[in-house]
Structure formats: structure tokens, C-alpha cells
Image (cartoon, rainbow, N blue to C red; front, side, top):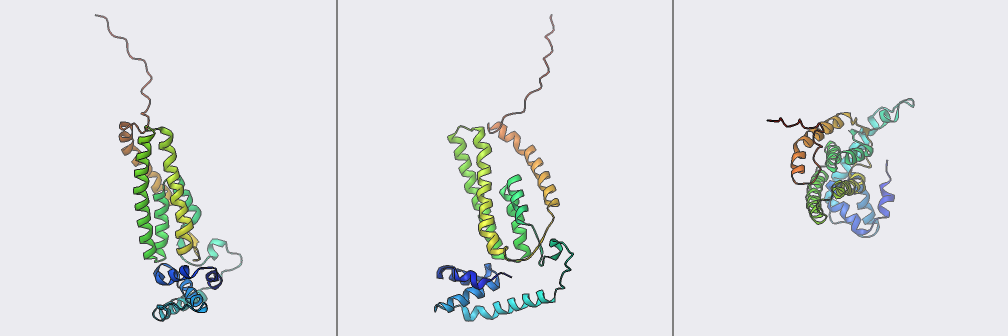
Length: 232
């Protein structure tokens, strides 16, 4: 189990207060550690009396459930020995974000948050993905106009946007809402097949529009020689 007490000692008062004021977005044990650290520094949070009973009850319940679970045998694999729900791993989210799009990785991360019942964090993730997609769409449109629909820009900028979105997934959402939870890795095969099918369908639907607007090159025409004209 993560040592939240030691972790909170490195936080500023403002960081600790954020854990308290947005307690629904964080693990209960982390919020309790933040309350304890604020009290140790002589700045107890006004919300402590209202929050502590429910937080302590949730932590006690989690500890009791963990103690009641049977201990895995030493011969079992790491995936079988891990406690907690089945979640998509960081590696799977990276793979889908880079291979398909930030939306694919965001959906998998959102499924994780839903299974962990982090409703506030899920709402924040949805808002981020929608807002960032809107901003990146306008940025791509402006860049294409500036560079006269350059094919290199068309291929490179979406990759940059995917990387930025992925960094936010792994640096912000994962450590705060998933990272401290023990879980078993969920199979990526089904979402991979779904993404392949959706990608193929979208390419068939969107490509004619992209060709019309000069964003991609048209397919090479049939190279067969034309039949000679008949003489009168």
C-alpha cells in the first residue's frame, strides 16, 4: 500500500487543501493523509470534521475487504496475484493513443475511471478530451491554411496532438485517480478489433471529403492505356 503520509509531507499547503476541497476526486486514504498533514502543520482544514467520518469508514471497509481476500499462492502469475478490478494498463492506453488516436486512449482511460467509480474524474476527462479536440481541430485547420495544405503538416500535427493528450492522461489523470489502485490488466484484443473496424469505416467515409479539399492525394487512376479512337 502506498505511503500517503510520506507523500503528503512533500506537498505544499495549497496542494493539501486541494485534496480536501476536491475529496471526491481522490482516494480516501490520500485525503485522510492530507488532513493529517495539515493538522500536523498547525493548519487544520475546516472541512475535516465533516469529511473524516465518511473517509475513515471507506478506508476501513477497503482494508477489511483486502484482509478478507485469500492470499495468492507463490506460483501464481503477477496478473492473477494482483488485487482489484480489471483495468486497461498504461501500456494499452499508450498503444491505442498512438496507433489510433487520443480518443481511443481516452475512452480506455474513461472505462478505468468508470469501473473505479471516479465520477468526478471521469467528467473531467470527458471535458478535457472534448475541449482539447476542439482546440487541436482549430489549430490544425489554421496550420493547413498557413502552410497551404502541406501534406507533411497534415500527417505530423495530429501525431503531436495525440502525444500531448497522452502526456496529460499519464501525468495527470493516471497518478491521481488510478495509479495507487491494485488491478489486473484487462485484455486489449476486443477494443483493438473495434478500433480497426471503426478506422476502416471512417477512412471510407472521410477520404472522399479530404480528397475534395486537397488534404490528401487522390488514388492513382487506372494505368491501362486508352483504347485507340476508331477511324471513320
